[in-house]
Image (cartoon, rainbow, N blue to C red; front, side, top):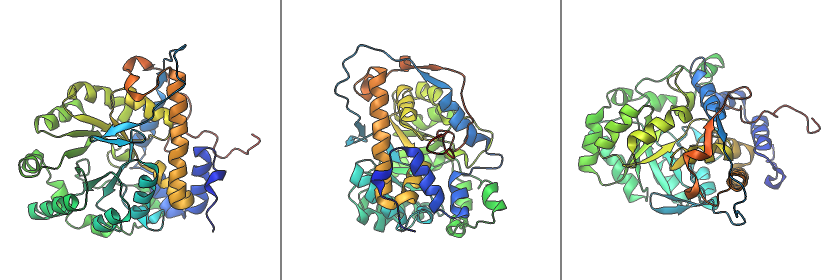
Length: 363
């Protein structure tokens, strides 16, 4: 099947539809699914839909800057490609293709350690802002080797994911008998991940000089402990609803974590962010950067590297429109006063941001 021409995509919804048409049932279910009843998946969307805007008017918004700082460097948007295992299931070239798209557009990539073609090959694929995310599958020497390799290949920060002490039951995959190709290697050495504790965080900070990101923080209490350990980035995440079911949505816990951190570290967030308005809400609530997980996968599945770039272009247009209509010209002007709580509207879910999916063009 030939990939569609990306200029034909005018909305993110059209990209989602193209990805659905091109993916086999197994990879599609893996992409949109979550753990068990998928309550956390739905709460991610519900939390975002429970935030409304408070726009200001009669402000000069003729020039809008959508750029942001990422670990001291300039990015085109305050977003990063979140670490996704098995990108090779969605696009030929896997993480290397994602790196090319990130570099072409101008946003950072966080590479998952369970994604092909691996650290060295992905770094060689494109010159982009990049961080490395590790699932701990070995001893201290094994971790140190990954830190060394990441530093040697231009990764600007190192991430430990901490919400995977147990591997969740993802029922869409189980029911569909979809065995992920990377699952066997992910299981090998999983006891090391189960045994991960604050002791290993302290050891990392004592031994290594790469900025450390802790991904999977979901409470103010753990955010405080992370800051006390000198962690540079508190990454608020529930693994896209793929790990602990019946958790709160990321956007719902973001304010308490921002308050607990109190500017002592950067706060990043992911979990159901699919639209430009979602990104703006997170920044207004105090996040520094927003991780995009499913959305880049959908762009890659729809049309490869050009599909990812087009996805980010549309997202940028949504963000620019939102900022202007809020009466601000940059992310630096956003404050919590630009948002307020409101009853959610619509059905939450992994694709709840696209209520027109399935409707004909004429309605």
